[in-house]
Image (cartoon, rainbow, N blue to C red; front, side, top):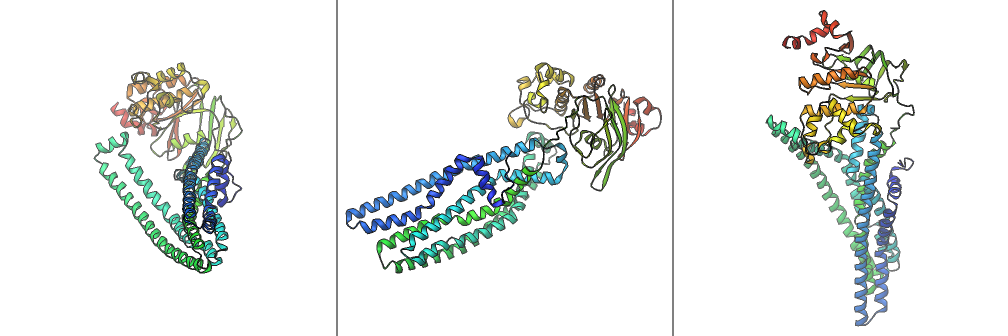
Amino acid sequence: MKTFDEYPGWLWALRYGFSVSRLWSVISSVLIFAVAFLPAINVVVVRFLSETLIDAKSAMLMLVLTGSLFGTGGALQQIANASSRINALRVNTHAGDQFDRKMTHVPAVLYESEEFMSTVRKARQCISEGHPSSQFQASINIVSAVITAGTLAVALYDLSAKAAFISIFAPIPTALAYAWYGRQEAKYWPIAAEFNRRSVYLQDQFSYYRTGSELATMNATSQLALGAAQSRRDYRKIREKLEGKSVISDSLSGMVTTVLFIVALVFLYRDAQHEVGAVFAGIIGLMSGISAMAGIGYQVGELAISMPANHHLRELLQIDTSKPQESIISDVTSVSVQNVGVRYDDLQAVRDVAFNVEQGSLCALVGENGSGKTTMIKALQGVQNDVSGSILVDGKALNLADSRQWFAFASVHQDYGRYELSVRDFVTLGVPESVISESSIAEAMRFAEAEEFVSALPQGLDSMLGVQWGGSELSGGQWQRLAIARAVLTDAPVWFMDEPTSAVDAPTEQRIFDRLAREAERRIIILSSHRVSTLRGVKNIIVLKNGTVCETGSYQELMENETEFYRMFSTQLETA
C-alpha cells in the first residue's frame, strides 16, 4: 500500500494523485495548463488581427476569429472541468479503498484506543469531504494561475510594461483574502463538523426502525429531535459566521482588484499610444486573465483546508497495523491464567486473577456488573491493553506485551452487532472459507436453535436482515441465536460466550446450554452469565468481585455454603 510518507504535505497530494489516477491526472492537468495559456494567446491573436486586417471584410473576419478563439477556450475549459471531476472521483475512490484496506488489518486492541479512533474518524471525514482530490486540484489550479499570470505578463509587456507588472500581482489580493478565510475555516470547521455529526446521529436514531420504534414507544422522539435541531442551529451559526467573514474578505479583495484593473487599463491606454487594436487586445487579455486567475484565492483557501485534513489520512495510513508473523495456535487443550491484572489508566480493573481451564467441561466467569468478567475475557482474547501477569496456553507462556490474537477462538459478545446483511453473510462473517458449507451452516443453525425461524424467512439463508434495506426485522433473541450460530460455524478450539443467551427464552436457552456442555468435551468454552439456571451443570465457576477472584468451584460446591455465589443468585433461586 503506497502512502508516500516521504513527501512533504504540500506535495503529497500531487504525488498521490498522479500515482493512483495516472491517466486522468495527466489529462486534466494538461487541459488545465492549456487553458492557462489562453489569455496570453488572446492578446497575441487579437493584436495581430487588428494590425493586419483593416477593411470591413477583414474586420468581420477578425470578429469571427476572435469569437471562435473565445468559444474554443470556453469549450476547452468545460472539458478540463469534466476531466478534473472524473479524476477527483478516481482519487477519492482510491483513498476510500485504502482506508478500507487499512481498517481490514487493524487489530482489535487498537479499537480500545481513543487516540486511534479519533484518527480514524478524522481520516474518514477527510475522505467523505473529498480532501485528497481537493488538495490535488487546488495545487494544479494554483500552478495554472501562475502560468496564466506569467504568460499574460509576457504578452502585455510589449504593449505596457506597467500593465504587465500589474497583471502579475492582480491575483494577490484575492489570494491573500482566501488564505485568511482558509485559516478561519480551518479553525471553525472542525467545531461545525462535530455539531453536524451530532445532529445526523440524533436524527438517525428516530429515523431507523429499531431505535425509532423504541423512542416512539417511550414518547422520547421529541427529545432527540430537539437535540438534533439544536445541533443544526449551532452548525448553522458557525457556517453563517464563516460566510460573513467570506463576504468581508471577498468585498475587500474585489475592490482592490478593481482598482488594480483600472490602473492597468490606464497604463495600457497611455503606453500603447492610443492604438485601438493594441488597447483592445490588452483589455481582452486583462479581462480574461483576471477572470482565469480569480479562483486562485479560493484554491489557496482550499489548499489551506485540505492539507491539515489529509494529514489525518496520512497519519492513519502510517500506523503500523501489520499482523505478527507468529502463527496462531490452532489446537488448544488448556489455558492457565496466573496473577493477571488489567489497568484502565489509573483504575485497576482486574488484579491478581488466577484460574485454569481445560477441555472437558464448561468454565463460567460470574460476578456483578463491573466485577471484571468482560475485561478478563478481552484479556484472554488479546484485545486488551495494559495486561500484566501470565497466560499459558498448553503450558506455553504468551507474550502479553504483544497484544494480538494468540490462538484461534470464536466469540459471542454481550453487545453483539446486528449487521444488516443476508442471513448467510451474517453467519459467515469472519469464518474461514475452509469450514463453510451448506451442511456446516445447517448444523450451526440447529445448534443455535435458529433453523426454524430462518427457514420461515422469505428466502431462507439468502433473506436480507433489517428493514433499512428492505429485509426482515428479527427479535433480540433471534439476532443473538444467529450470533451463536456464527461462533459455532467458526469451529475454533476456544469459545468465549459473554452473556450468549441474555435475550433468549428459558426453554431455548436450556437446550443451547445443554449443547454447549456436550461441546465442551472437545473444546474450551468460557462463558459469563447472570442466570443461575444456565450454571447448574457447570463444574468450573470462577466468581469475580471488584476485579479479583473471590471463589471457585462447581455449582454444587458453591451452593452448599453461604458463599458470594449463593448470595448473588439467592433472589433467582427463591423465585425459581
